[in-house]
Image (spheres, rainbow, N blue to C red):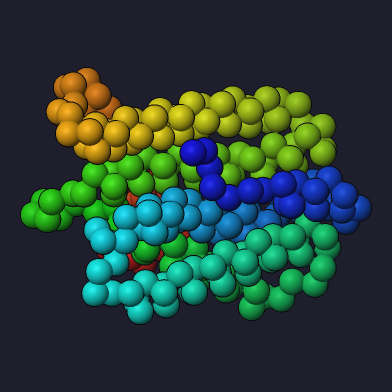
Length: 228
């Protein structure tokens, strides 16, 4: 399956922009735009899963689902365009950056709703898949964009580190995609889908990692006044 959002257009803008400098690369505005786009890109996995199994997620809420997707894709396109504008050296208003920050908060709240454990409600296996893909995907998209930048500016050590992160992310993505396909095939053919303890622990650890990352890193940085 692989990562669903293509970043080649962003790569082309970074490579071809004469106005994109190291100072822009390390700027706060570029950082916020990069994080926003990457967060939104991770949510595409959840949307794809819901579209694949609508009877599980969307029954009775079709209109709300369509509204959610409309909002999501608008935010994704705006974040992508804002990121490109910053790279190209276009005028980016303070309001544009505030919108980006609002969209980051929207992403965190949305992902927190999907990846939650109240100790009462059962956790759906698809949400566990998403939790694994969320953490992996966020680091993948951020590192992807950083790899384009570090290569452009010949930041060799940073470029190597980006590619190490990308390799780990790609390996984790392959693992969760293969696991889901295997489980779904067993369900389809009526086979036993019981997981080995080691594999079950790995899934639980991936779930916990995403929960901890959201509560200990994302929320304190971008939702400093939230209670979590």
